[in-house]
Each structure stands twice: as structure tokens, then as C-alpha cells.
Image (tube, rainbow, N blue to C red):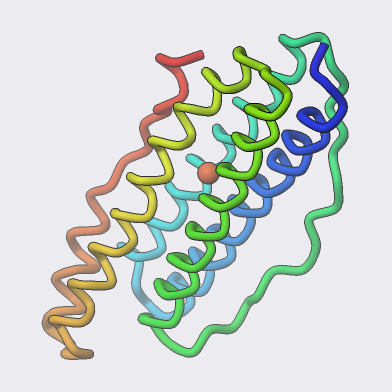
Length: 171
Ligand SMILES: [Fe+2]
């Protein structure tokens, strides 16, 4: 069984992962509405990825013989101030998630919960990747500087992204 503080932190993270999923689904809907199916596709795949993160935490709590407690997710933003604003919000959100993962790691270290420390390492590495991916898109958007041709090309490139369950091999 997980110690109470560790369990509380992980149950909070289950919520944060499903919140992330829902946020990216809302961003996907926004891009579809703006006629950017590639951006929308990227966000839809990100939504699927976040679901697998939530599921991975869920399964971990069950495997440790503890009780999952699901919390409310709430209203998502549905309007954004343009393409760059969406990606800036996505980056800020991933930075927030990183700080949450680091917090759970601190709690697990404090509790000398070696299994949780080991489990969390996957997420620590994953967050480096998540932030880098969004930062790269933001850097490209900066270069494009709002020009239609560039946006069109980037949107087409993002259409190529396919869903891969990266948690599958690790479970
Ligand atoms: Fe995540």
C-alpha cells in the first residue's frame, strides 16, 4: 500500500493527466474550427497520449493495492488568442505538469518509497520530451512569423503525427 501522502499526490496527478488530455482535446477542437487540421491532429494525438499517462498512474495505484480517487476536471478554455497563444499555453501547461511530477518525486523521496521513485523516473524523462516538443513548434512558429505559406507547411507536417502508446512497453 502507498503511504497516504504519496497516494494523495498520485491521485492529484491522475487528475492533472486527464485534465491535460481534456485541455489538448479542447485545443484540437479550436484548431479544427480554424481550418488547421494538422495542428488539430497533433493536439488530438497529444490528448490520446495524456490519457495513457493518466492510465499509467491509475494502474500503478491499483498495483500498489491502493485506492484511486477521481476528482472533477472542470471547464476547459474554448477560445484562444490565435495559433501562437495556444502553443504558449500548451508549453506553460507542460511546465506546470513538470513541477507537479517533481513534487510527487519529492514526496516519494521523503517517504523513502523506492518503487514510486523508480516508477516516476519514466515521467521525469517524458516531461523533458514534452516540453522540448512544444518548444520546437513555438520556435518554428516564431520563424514563420504569421506567414500563411509557413503556417500551411507546418500544418501539413503536423498532419503526419500518429499515435504511439509510449507507456505500453513500460507497463
Ligand atoms: Fe502527461
